[in-house]
Length: 93
Image 1 (spheres, helix red, strand yellow):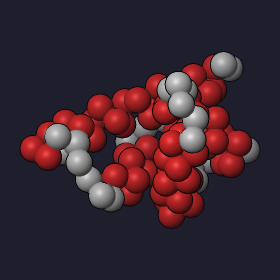
Image 2: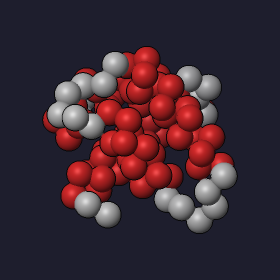
Image 3: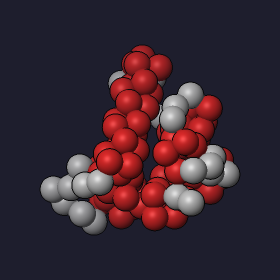
Image 4: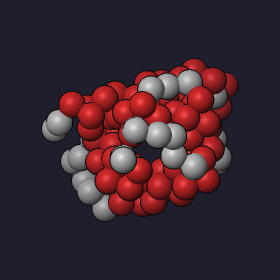
């Protein structure tokens, strides 16, 4: 895995931990999780710098949801790595 993919994977792991803390009362359950992740990744992380520019929030939400679907079909993969590869492929400049 290259450095940028590792960085994005680490950011995804971090937002997952933040999300779990914020939604601890529901044990992390949140039907709109992708919106939370997109907001945090764009506004509170280094994702825009890692990609070369900030992605459009709605496009990132869509990619997160599509990545979740792809992950369901990729047993044994780490979700952060799979999502990172897809996000970089779609948004990196």
